[in-house]
Amino acid sequence: MLLGTSACGEALLPATYEGPAAAEVSGAVVRSTNAAVTEAGAPRFSLEWLNAAPRADEFPLHGQTVGFARSAQLQKDWDLEFAVPRQAAKMTLNFGSGTATVAIGKLVYFDDKNGDGRLNWQCARHDCDQVKALGEEFVVFMDQPLTCTTTTAEGVEKRTRLSAGFHYFQWVGSSVKEVNRDADLRFELADTPASWVDPTSNLQRFMQQLQRSYGANALGGC
Image (tube, rainbow, N blue to C red; front, side):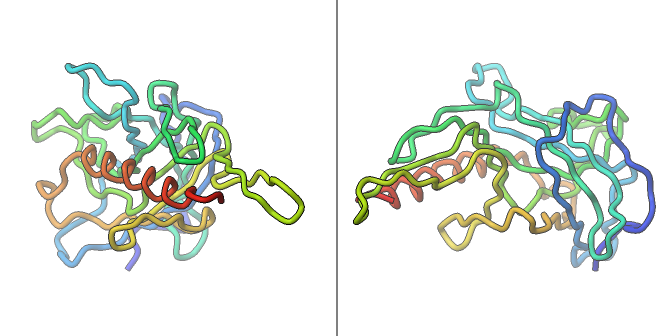
């Protein structure tokens, strides 16, 4: 069962939104098995990127606000807009066939208790922001295409493995798989707020698996 009045509502673009939009997707919030769980009273979305080079005293995630509006389409709840991630979230990774500048993040649906439009993981008071759901997908931004070369009957050919721009991945068993970029992103409400912790370790594990997957596929060419 989807939540939200999908056919009404005005665009709610935070004053701190960092534009212009570089990607537009739709999202669906899914009810948990706990009937007492509700949607956010002041719904907001944050795209939490892994900090590329955090200092020891810094939080390992770099939050970036997300533009959003209630969707006018049936079976969808939200229309979301992403801006290109800041330089602080971009890192250079080795994918076997070459290196690429990448940002890796997770979408978070939260109740903006203090009304500042941003998610604060480090506040523990009753009036602090409350995480309602983590997006099922991992968000990957490629600064430039990830390419490889392969030998064909016509000679050496250069192929694109991941195009520039936004990509969305999910875990499938112990592997990661890219999902259709036109597919709706999903947010399943947490049964209890205490069940959610910051996704840093999960993002780091995903990053390592992404490198392994594309590194292994690069052996012997494309």
